[in-house]
Length: 327
Image (cartoon, rainbow, N blue to C red; front, side, top):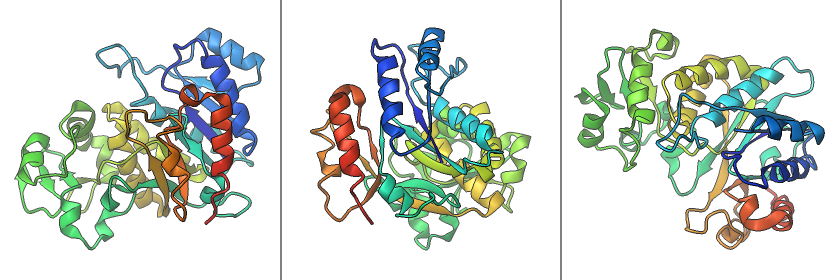
């Protein structure tokens, strides 16, 4: 497998050293490691001189009010491009994407198998977001009322309906108030519900429509880790390009893309536990200590764990400790 690490920023003085360190650390367990971020030409020259496989990606069409993309879209674009790069490889059978200096727990992700099992998509199931915010097929969940508070349908004419199709709405704002959906601040933003509405109206989305003609949008989900088999690279890329075309943020895009790929290929999705810290000191050794101290809980991905906030020695030590977790 290959590992692709997404760096959101490249304006700090230590970015070259940080990327070199991160790459070398992951090379202790993975032969193929790719660093992705908004790197400059000078950065790329430095990486080449140090045998670092890196890709630079600037999505100038999707900038915030400060002129920064900040990792809201390019992780999806970079994962798509990396999958396509290896789709015909006789060596790489899957690509794991990691965000925010997060740490992969290889022991848990591989489930002790060698070579790495590359037959399933692996995506996070977050303990803080609840079961319906995981990468599951919401059509098969028995708790339909709970699904109704997380998922919805958008039709080609632009109108929306709740998952159970009991009500019709003219906009995402009406749907959020009328169901109501699970509390989340971003449903009504251009990069989520509004972009999804444009996607559903796009003729290119026809292959993903339900029997009633709608596009089903499962819940938003954390989008800081995913493993995708390269045999599904082209199908993943097709769904990803549709979301990028309409400027849909990764938290609103990844779960829907996974659902689209699942339906087109019948690939199965395996959930892995994700440990995320939301405290003010998120990403530091102190705040993330719970991920190492939960005893029987086996996390496949720890996020975030910032290199800059912990130093190279601290990051390396924690990375090694986490590999000891066994199923």
